[in-house]
Length: 437
Ligand SMILES: Nc1ncnc2c1ncn2[C@@H]1O[C@H](COP(=O)(O)OP(=O)(O)OP(=O)(O)O)[C@@H](O)[C@H]1O
Image (cartoon, rainbow, N blue to C red; front, top):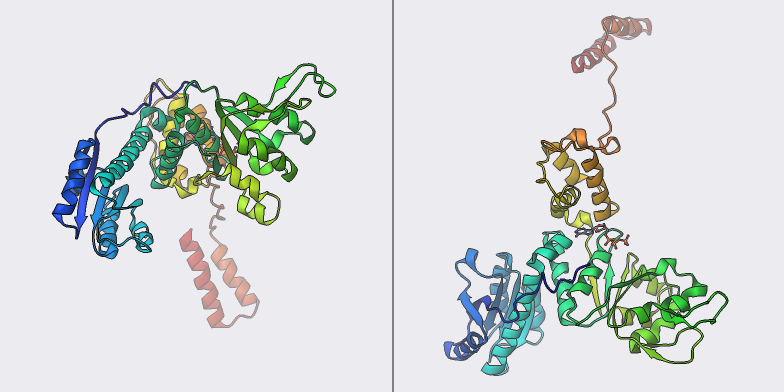
């Protein structure tokens, strides 16, 4: 996979735009911070007019944090993506920080002095801007499609952890939600120089008797069949990223064997007494509920804390139905790169959006490809392009009404000794069936 460095490289010192609001703090206090931000390339505007404001902003407050929380709440409801709350001199943070976060602040900072407050705010805003630029860049948009707030939030977290940390990442989510794809993106955006390829190991396929060799490699002659020395996954991932897929399938004794290499980066090949060192970023993925597995004793706590430096939970497709049509168009384009994506008939759109997707994005992709195969390449995509097994079941057939049914029903009621009132009721029943056709 090509490196994103050439296609997705936000200008490091591009100006940062943010809106700015002051709640109860004096001008004389705030002005030096505003000047300090300007010197660091931060362009501030007031948060009006609402439609034009940048998506990131700062609320500086003194006095009550509750007043700041009200203001933050209003702005967050107006669609601002991230808001930094800065408690100026005289502002109370303490336990009120939780209130600010609950109101919609993404982060809270306490005032130090004008100089260091300006530096901290500028750094935070610059980081957010870099994350936004990466999330918006054409490569990321094309690689991980989705516009829903739930998806954008997880994508921003993935970009942040990739670009600004070396943390081990645990990605959870149902099957087919895009865990491996997110792992690839984290690897691509990792700024380490001269990275090698992402090394992928599917833990569900590791045979316990060969696990030592798979993870740590072996020396020639270490066991029957070891005709040559071989590098294991941790060694191959030196200077790069190791992706352990289906990590929830690793038996507890194997988890224990990996504790040292994950913590210290040191290991021995099978058949060798020499310690080797590997420097790698670890990304693990699972569709299991590891908290549940820990409670049952199937997953080791010490292993969990080593692999979960940062956790990303990918939402299922049913939690982000807004993404179904953009994903469908994306898969259609992948299959038909030369043509314009066609219009969808309303009934097709409704089917796509309302259908359950137990296999999540993988399921949607496979449906899109089956539709592409039926589509003749011109006009709208119609219900005729939907594969048979996806079409709604036909309604049960009604028995057609025949002349003579009415007389037959009345004769039968008379023969059974029905009263005149019962005969009238039977006649009314038969008439209503006939009217429905
Ligand atoms: N946001 C996305 N944009 C484009 N393609 C996606 C997206 N998410 C998933 N896909 C595609 O869906 C399929 C499944 O994705 P992936 O293998 O990453 O899922 P997974 O969560 O790792 O699945 P599993 O748990 O079964 O291993 C792949 O073909 C992938 O390319």
